[in-house]
Image 1 (cartoon, rainbow, N blue to C red):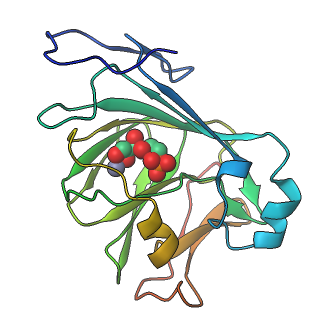
Image 2 (image 1 turned 135 degrees about the vertical axis):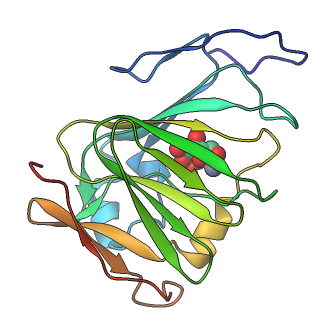
Length: 208
Ligand code: S6P
Ligand code: ZN
């Protein structure tokens, strides 16, 4: 498997393959299956029942730009359609331990960017061409909100930001994106540690 490059890095172009999420030049590729998402879906029994299914929930194709200070790594995340007991497939979600901003750009499919600062959450509808801004100190998770096609986006982030996944397990993400007919709804976390101040918003994309 390809690895990150070692600085100093000379300028180079990166091709993004919109139909697969692959990048050229290629760096590491991460695959997250249902079994890798322990403790994240609200219905733990439903997750237990499907955890061995070997189903891929999302992939992350990175360029060779390394996660080190002063570099700007890029990656393409692809979240496949699906849900666990009505809660849509999503990324694990994380905080940046070194609080720095990040930019997402929707490429294919329809999704959402859920942000949580520990007390309030925000939601950004993501579609091809939509750029979502993640300010410092906001944990972030991406969701495929139920369209039949994969939701795919580009992420660009400071190489020194880091990834804290335990923060999300400890604090939650403020809300959950769940199926509501042909659309979706955001349901605030309802029990400790799921408590939060947030908005119960019903959202949806026409034609889904
Ligand atoms: C990195 C950026 C994304 C995510 C990717 C997977 O800062 O936010 O590349 O790593 O979408 O999400 P997660 O929560 O599993 O890292
Ligand atoms: Zn991030």
